[in-house]
Length: 156
Image (tube, rainbow, N blue to C red; front, side, top):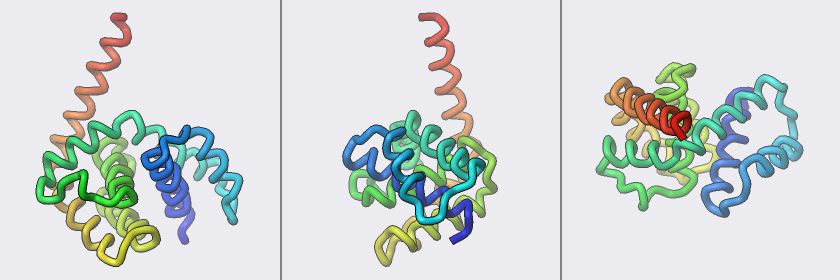
């Protein structure tokens, strides 16, 4: 497995456990890093951390946008692992914007092959293909939301 894929894999495991069992992400992340057969470099651990703590505060927003732009896939019917793979890829290409869209989609499909059902890779590719058509609009929605939260925090 490629190094950045390993980092995404750890981030996915943390997000999945947080989503499913509501365990504290920081604790799970520490455990996953310690349990990793091949330790992540500091740079890759930081990349995984950025994904985890980038996705978590935006989970509801990401889910709403996935539901809005991919209505043919009702969110409540998406497997927990697939939902978290989508969140990671979506966050990478539409929020963080440090990962090229094609790379984010390819990495999501790889994670789906590793962790999802037999149909997951095709499903993930299809949903992300729909979302990518709205990348700029979605980025602006998230950016506006974050700006509003920051202003509200400063005013309180």
